[in-house]
Image 1 (tube, rainbow, N blue to C red):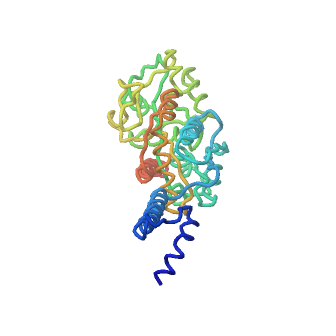
Image 2 (tube, helix red, strand yellow):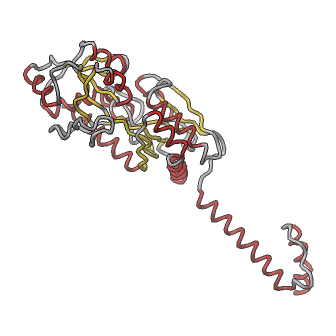
Image 3 (tube, rainbow, N blue to C red):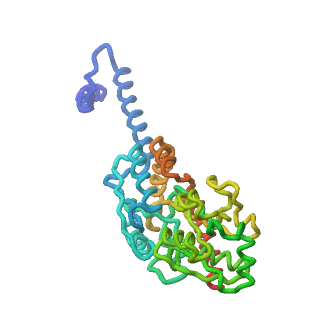
Amino acid sequence: MLRLMAARLPRAANRANIPPATEATGMLGRRALLGGMAMAGAAQAGIAQAQGWVPQRPIQIIVGFAPGGGSDIVARGLQQAAQDVLPQPIVVVNRPGAAGVLAAQQVAQAAPDGYSLLVTGGSESTSVPHYREVPYDPQRDFHHVILVARYPLVMLVKADSPFRNPQQLMAIAKRTPGRLTYGSSGVGSLYQSVFVVLGKRAHVELLHVPYTGGAPALTAVAAGEVTATVATPDECKALVDARALRPIGVASRERCAEYPQVPTLIESGYDVYMENLKGLSVPAATPAPVVAALYESFHRALATPTWRSFAQRVGIATADRDGAAFSRDIQDMSDAIAAAVKG
């Protein structure tokens, strides 16, 4: 038997690209070589197990809005940064329409294989489903992977307006029910919901004037057509710098870096939390190892110089929270909007 083993070992070794053992190597040498092969194989298996799912083809990030908007900008930044950590390219696909509903429906019904992600956290996830029927449930039909960025929502009035803070605005609204106007980016938008929730918490009635987007609503406030609106800091910066608009409140939990002197609505006495969140979600049935691998990849992407440089250049406040925390933020806003709309 020993002679048979000795006769076979050189041939087995040759198949593994190991030179045949010599007399100097002996049986101990052959055992050491075979033991090394086993250890190397185990190490490679361990590495593969630690890495988990690895994409084998390009990954799509679906954006429910036109190029150039906040969701699209975040997706383009991730597209660049993820190339530093993923073996396959990222493809950004814009599918605008119905305030993000069309794109959300597409991803909710996509194969749960990790190759279709949706930029979520905005109106399509928190607000629109409470104003009209949509073909998906923002929580049940998605697994939220990672929160990438958060945009504070700043309340703005015309620069020469008498209103200096949210309390003054709500006091006038209380004395003139249904007459104080606010503009938004459309019916069911998150921007409308800020005022719907605020009106509910302040026990006042406000008049909504919908526009075709956030920019027209800002212009309307600057022109005196409506009294107030909300926008992200990057959206309103030009008009604030030009002294056409004045920020008077922030709907986030904390003050925003761009306007540190402006109080939050919570500080002003109104329990209102609203932010324009930007994260990535996949179909709900996506396997846990795939979700974990996607989270780890994009978590690493957010730490790259590519992303940091991009975020600083375009004014993105990086969030980097896991899917569970992201889901809680969406649910908190959704619950508040649902209560205000139904009430």
